[in-house]
Amino acid sequence: MSIRPVKRVALSRPTMEGAGVRLRRAFGFGDTSDFDPFLMMDDFRGDSPSDYRAGFPWHPHRGIETITYVLAGTVEHQDSLGNKGQLGAGDVQWMTAGSGILHQEMPAGDPKGRMHGFQLWANLPSRLKMTKPRYQDVPSKEIPEITDDDGVTVRVICGEFWGKSGPVDGVAAEPRYLDVSVPAGKKKRLKVEDYRQAFAYVFEGSAAFADASEPFGVLREAEANGQEVLVRDPVGNRSLVVFGAGDEIVVQAGEQGVRFLLVSGRPLREPIAWHGPIVMNTDAEISQAMVDLRAGTFIRQ
Image (cartoon, rainbow, N blue to C red):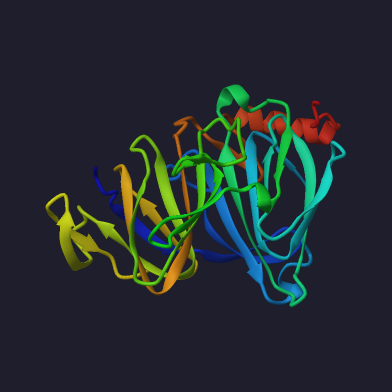
């Protein structure tokens, strides 16, 4: 087994999206090669309705999948195909935009005014860019949750882990999307196959991630594969951790424990052409999407 090195750690950046939603962007737009097949991830949370109530009014998507995971509050959604519903705490929506969809997402707080969720964008391979749109709405009760003997708890949203399969299926990039909680002071090894690219996003507590190759960090121990293990200084809330190659990560929870998303997938390694929420392979395909929007032919199904 080989420990994945930590390539870099970065705090998510404050930004504003939609009609005025204050959020933090972990990554997205520009060079996303370290995250392939993922394109963007936003952390939207607030204790005041003024942070989020403007929402994300009608906008188009094509060529990608959007994954919305709600921890507190609700998100009401509806689209140009007649779908509508509401996501609550612990619920997930995996939307395959494919050939094109128009939708809106309107967040609301819990009884105390709190709202928290994540949206992750996953790329579609060129052969599926224009596939038929679909939704997978997953209530919290259908998401497997496993707790091991160390008290480590993992919610399996997508993919297979510890013998359980998440309820989201049929996704092209073979993603694994986990919500991981590690108790205070506990150290845990988590398998991530070496063909995957992987990142973690810490959103509660703090942790240090072991590193067997980087020439920096603080020496904590010497026990992995008989080699000295360098551990970075602990990272905390709103921290993105990008991993290099290997087949497992090692996490050491801080004094308050840690909760983080662990996301991995098979890289597509295809060219990317961006235009906001429309992501294709070529500029010509982007131009065609703009023509379709102006002509009213964006929705193909």
